[in-house]
Image 1 (tube, rainbow, N blue to C red):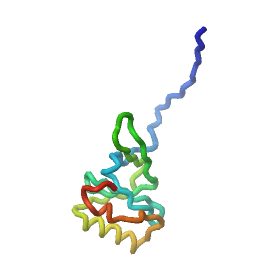
Image 2 (cartoon, rainbow, N blue to C red; image 1 turned 45 degrees about the vertical axis):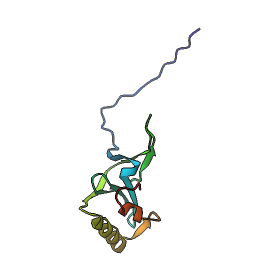
Image 3 (cartoon, helix red, strand yellow; image 1 turned 180 degrees about the vertical axis):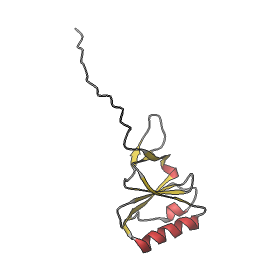
Image 4 (cartoon, one colour; image 1 turned 90 degrees about the horizontal axis):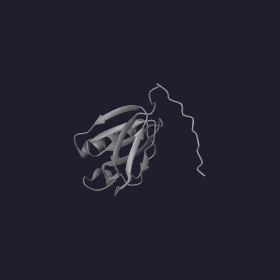
Amino acid sequence: MTTTRYAHETISDEPISENIILERPRPAYGYLGRDGDGYHHHVDRATDTVYISENKYERFLPENALTYWICVRGETHTIVDLESVADLEAWIDRVNTTTGWKEQPADLRVLLTRGESA
């Protein structure tokens, strides 16, 4: 005897409220931390860009992937284009002197070194 189950689905024309800000393999991503205003700072190492958002990152492992990926959802508060590692250092210092850091990874030197995973 075969069991049949029915599922009720609701289809909406509403847009998905959580945009994907950033999605990268883990080695191309760096998390700077949460500033004094509660915003999370994310570094896209592939494009040398800092994204500031209300949400922390999510880590996931795609099927058949060899490395974890990172996804940041929500709205972007600020985007900062970097030209060099010195710009990233300057951004970290600027946040430190303006709003301060509520949470910050223990070793930011890893983020400041190109070619190493964050």
